[in-house]
Amino acid sequence: MSNKILILPGDGIGQEVMAEVNRVIKWFNENNSLAAEVEFDYVGGTSYDINGTAISEDAMKLAKSSDAVLFGAVGGPKWDNVEYENRPEAGLLRLRKDLELFANLRPAICFPSLVDASALKREIIEGLDIVIVRELTGGIYFGEPRGIEDLGSGNRRGVNTQVYETWEIVRIAEVAFELAKKRNNKVTSSEKRNVMESGLLWNEEVTKLHKEKYSEVELEHMLADNCGMQLVRCPKQFDVIVTDNLFGDMLSDVAAMLTGSLGMLPSASLGKSNNGIFKNALYEPVHGSAPDIEGKGIANPLASILSFAMALRYSFSRESDALLLEKAISNVLESGLRTKDISTKGSSIVSTVEMSDAVISALNNLT
Ligand code: IPM
Ligand code: MG
Image (tube, rainbow, N blue to C red; front, top):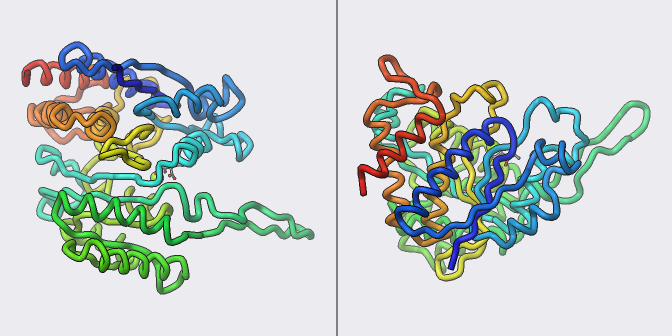
């Protein structure tokens, strides 16, 4: 039986880093009998240029029949004036919605060897290991009504709707509680109940679920603005943060920067699990398409490679392979190799390809 992987490199540095992920997949095929069949397709602006849409029906079909979708990045100035429904980001949003990937796991881990790449003081981030569980298929990203309305006389109205129902809150909170049980047993739920009814409902439903099913896990509630502040002030107070689509988008960028580099952070977008195995899940680096460094061969491939490690863990139930890959990456960092984004004084700067060469040698050395 083979494992089907769809790679959607997308735009900008997505192309460069996903080529390296493909080499790592090959390594696992050849050395650890992963038996992965890899297909490629287009998404984002690259797909728009070819198909006139940010993701084609064929690519959607392929995604639905894959065990894991490995996604690069989308967007860039080239497509700034594309009509709104065909903008590059629309491809990613459609994948999330149509594959029902409601749970976005965004770990923020500070690698010991990268402590000095963070803008924050060593004592604040050393040993940091938190996960943001972001709701991904609801809230203001998809709520109706939405749109821009012409009110006449040069006046217009832009509308988006924040809306959550009980079942959506409960299923994402369950993911957070289950994850916390395997970690440090603490969940921080974040919303704006002081201003938004949807936040009040979120708070009440999480509290109720906690009481009924997860009272052994520590639960705390924190207003989202305070949560942003606390993440920068004292991030190690957190274990798992569960929050809605929009707050999760913002808070995960804040958390990413704590670790020194956006270029290091993977993410997994998961739907329903079948005995702990997630089919049709999507894995992507937290960083974007970085058009400013596109084509220069200097992008950091590690966030995408770490996203593949998450795929090994969640889609293929290959925990030991995931750990092996994570260990190889941490060994490479220990050895002092750095792409430009994570370089500090005295480190040797390598290219995208050299970095993954090093990961592959580290894998060889570990086995
Ligand atoms: C993210 C990105 C996306 C989002 C964009 C590209 C649509 O910022 O995954 O965090 O807003 O969700
Ligand atoms: Mg974002």
